[in-house]
Length: 244
Image 1 (cartoon, rainbow, N blue to C red):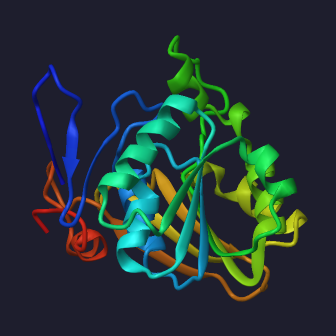
Image 2: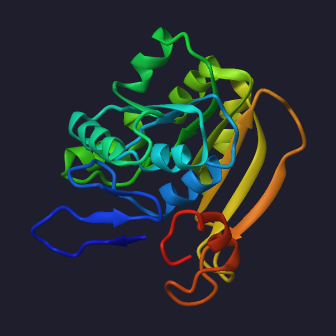
């Protein structure tokens, strides 16, 4: 991934098969989104849902690897507009439908079921909120809580469908226990370590309706210094990053 550095123009992120901007978006492109999108793209589906699509990154990443259709929901109007523009400029505009809506309002009125639901959710519970309204909404969980995501997913997932999300490592137990209350079970967990000597900061969780033994994995992003990426991380994101 590369991006433009001209301060007078919106920065453009370049991947192997598409480019996009996060200009004027509530949440910026980062490692969490790229990693979740890379993992989600390996799951087969006919219909997928991206909750809180932001600039459309995950939806476009998934579209690159699949022939299925993707609904991408975004509550912030300006961000949804950017996502629509990014989708139209991507090679797969016919696969993705951007919807400007609150997820809490969307799922009770949507009859469609999805084989795959992906969400890079807001996760700050107790930290100080910024003065920027958009970024506050995107980063703080009172705009879309774990409970709201999980109850919506329960009603929108197909029988054999999967919900994939990435959350702070310390919130894993809350997500797992809350999901179980809604009849969803963690079948896969991937601990994300910044470097081998550091503790996990994020974890990717897969929830389904089937209560099976949980598959536990670990991904280390960097082996030592900054940008010294591990082979595992390169393999997972290799279909997207220009230098991998």
